Image (cartoon, rainbow, N blue to C red; front, side):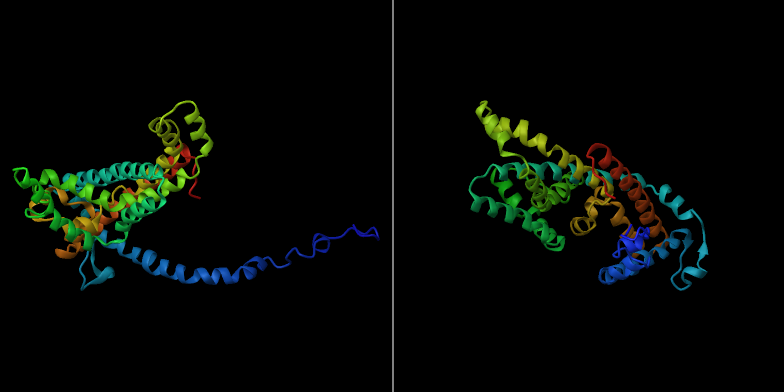
Length: 317
């Protein structure tokens, strides 16, 4: 109300309230323009290709295209589940992916704990640099190095023969291939994964360690009773969020190190899609396999979001 006693409207009382309902859009227009290139790329490379999902329900012929290829409904999915090696395909994917998730988490937490106990900063930074640097190398490079190291006359078997033992076929024995692939991925990624845990360790109050030391706790006891409980929420959160990608067993790695001798244990969903869809040109079957994996992935991601909120009090959106 002004001094004349006449009530003022809302816009008169506060001249900064926008009169135009699109005022906020006009105000933030530069920000929307900055997002435009990313939105265009997302639409072109993520959403537009989804039109190709229809191939999974057709007997697709490249010369006929999407419109004229025969519609077969769920026939390609019936072919998928009737394949004699379908169970091995899913089993290999789950074993390799779960092994990478479990051992990768353990190795990342362990290296973070060890580095946290190092007091020499130069030595600590050097070890951290050399461990997470491998993350930035392509499997095209590391795969070739791995094959050379683990070959019959490679570095590892040269050391084995020193002890009068027979060479070990790490990449040629079906029983050893999956553990070798899992450990190779852990070797590549554990340093980079430790960065998050090292960041979480910086948030632990030093007073807790000082109080424990006063009470007579040794270094191992302080790690067991203070550090690990403080990291538990971060470990649970990252494990749950990685659950959505559990079917990604590592296409690039397996494509490089896999060979016919271990085909029964190295074939995973992504590798099978590549072989069926591109090498044998069974486009419809390959798309059906990829679509099935995507549907399972969406379900697992939804479950991981719920579990993250339920057990780690973390909301994605």
